[in-house]
Image 1 (cartoon, rainbow, N blue to C red):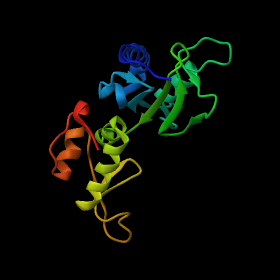
Image 2 (image 1 turned 180 degrees about the vertical axis):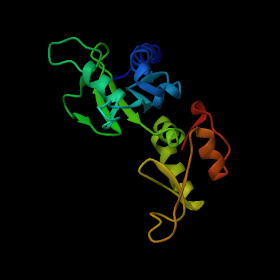
Image 3 (image 1 turned 135 degrees about the horizontal axis):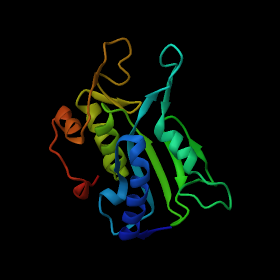
Length: 190
């Protein structure tokens, strides 16, 4: 199912307004960020707000406020809520949730990142897919690799070699590390 960009913008504004309090940072990615005329899904990238769980003698753990909120927003069948699990392929893990926006029927892909990996995740999830594949291949060609949502300086997997994580809190940091010119989302092509 595809909808006009204006409908995608409406859904994104609604979702971000509700999810923002549980995030350090949240932005739209995918075809909406690339300003395509029509969109088939909503992709969001967020840095969740992590808070300590109070205990008698100090914090006893931590809580991911974003996943708590998402779980509270998921409606059960017949119950109107802002989000639903994707009935055909329900997925929800530590870094990704595949959901559905009941009002529009659009699939919602919610990706999480840490502050130091946000730029890479946003860049890759903005796509398009061919551009993201090219970027990862180009990183490898330039002596870097992408693993578990992180940019690393060093050969693929690094093996026994010391492998340096490269912090990339912004997309421009990824381009800078790879010595590439910044390409705005609307101009990204394979």
